[in-house]
Length: 275
Image (cartoon, rainbow, N blue to C red):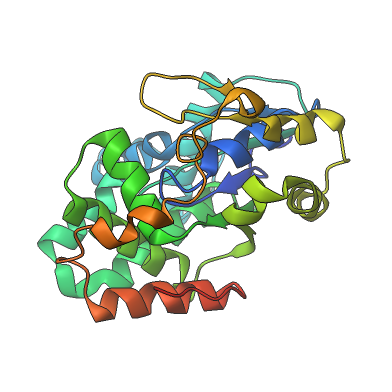
C-alpha cells in the first residue's frame, strides 16, 4: 500500500456501496504492482475532522512555514494514518472510500440547504490528502443498487435512496475530479474490454490476474465471501440486474427531482440513465 514515495498518488474509487466497487477494487488489487487497503472512508474523513476540530491546540510543526494553512496539517494527518496502517513497498496503491462520509451526513442533517458546500468540502478533503491521485467511479442502475443494498444492509429503502442521491450530487459537483466512470453492466456481461479500459486509464499493464479477477463474484450476500462466477446459477446472486423486481420496489420516497439528479450525474460521465 502507501509509502512515502507514492502516498499522494492512489487510485481512489468513489461510489455508493453495492455498485460494483468490490469487483473493480479486486481487479486493480490483483495487479502485482498494486497494493490495496479496502474501504478507507473513515480513515480519511475521521482524522481530518479530528485535526480540524482541535486546530487550536495542535503544536507547530517546525518543518513547515509559520503561515502554513491548517488544512495542510489535516492532510498530513490523514496521510500519516495511511503510512502507519498500510506500509508497503509496492509502487502503486488503490483504495475505495465508498459511501457518504459521516461528516457530510452530519452537516447535511444540520444544514440541509448547504449541500453545495458539503460536497465541495468532500472533494477538498480528498484533494488535499491525495493531491496527485486518480479518482474513478462506477455506474450501476440506482434501482439495482437500492435492491442490493437493502438486502445486504437491511436498511430502509428511503434511507438508502437518500444516500444514493447524495452520492450522485457529490459525483456531479463542479469540483469532482473523477476522470473515469466504469459501467457495471459491461463489467459483469463483457468484462475484458472494460477492464482493459480501466487498466489503460490508470497506467497499468494488462496483467492476466486482473482479468481473472472478473471470474469471481464478490460479497454477493452478507457473510459470504467471493465465489466463482461459473459455479453460480442464480442470476440475481451473481450481482447482475434486478430489473424484474423494479416494479415491486417501494418508490414512494423517490422524487422526480431525485431522478433528475441521477440522470444528470450519469450524463456528466457520458452515460444515459432511464427509469
